[in-house]
Length: 500
Image (cartoon, rainbow, N blue to C red; front, side, top):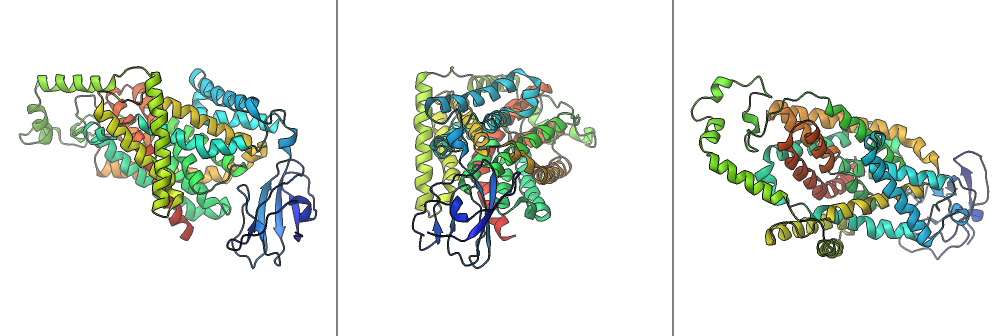
């Protein structure tokens, strides 16, 4: 099939050629989408811009190609050529799996054992390690293994993340933090809309997908970024790698910044329902009025005997302590995680919205977690979160390998500016809404903000390091809730951004 057009290299040498040189084997065009599928492309290891002539009635429809919709106008697309796959040192089989696993493990080890790694985070380090190996010609940039990880391993990892969190405890054990978290999530959505209005066109034709994935990330975490990316069809390649890198770097800077914001320790004496009743963190409150009969704080104190507090503490401790992961718990986690993915896909298809399959999966996995915790004294899925974390690191390594070149990081400039606007608006909303209007203590607001931006692990780590042990559990619960709802909110925001 002859196709008219030309190609130009975007990553160094300029070159022009017949487009038929680039697109060698085609399948018949689909009558509905008027698209053809690229079977083989072999050029130099660069990223090329393809211009199809206006009279061409077909366009490349592949995962790593971006195109304009209007068929009557000249179309432009970016193609990451796959010729490096044939020359890479590690191309397939167990060596490829071993290399990807080594990048994932290396990122985790560096985060745990070095201050440099802790600042960058394991996902970013895994991505960068694989990117370096790919740029050096060691890892292939395209392989069916990558599609397998993208299609199956990543959704399973996201499901496993949720199986170990009993979200029923949110309102009882973390009500104030949960309220601040909701305000912070609204701030993340508002920040995305504001940033899109200012810098949206700078992100390119797939910018709305990137913006939506970033919004999901700043409600839940990187797992939601990955899930929304897949749901919206954001193809693995330079844009996705640059987005992940900018996301993790900006997150590290933000979490460092909120670590130094002063906040007095309200202590565990203030119950989760009455964090706003302490004058330690809110000097503007009238401490005399707080001591009057009928005030919420007085009622709380007089209605709680020493025996009640001891019993509550014992119950909390018992719920927090559970057996170590076993073959049984890991097997159950895998079984129910896979079931959650399957049911999510089925439910999404049943309502005619296949793109929300991961959001549906998150709901199913959260239900499994709640039912499992209600049936047994402790979660039957012990170890699921760690297993899911390992699967997600493997996914991040795949993103780095698929980028193929360090030039993928060049486009982080506008992405970093976009994220900066998102985070500034988020912080403004959660401070005004949580601290000023809702009169929540600053440590509650900062913990919730950390759970929004970084996730449960970073929020709990901040609470522990700042001497707020009573905030560790609320941090974990609210952060886990972010994992459960972040994907759905990100997909909803994407529909909004498309019409703005």
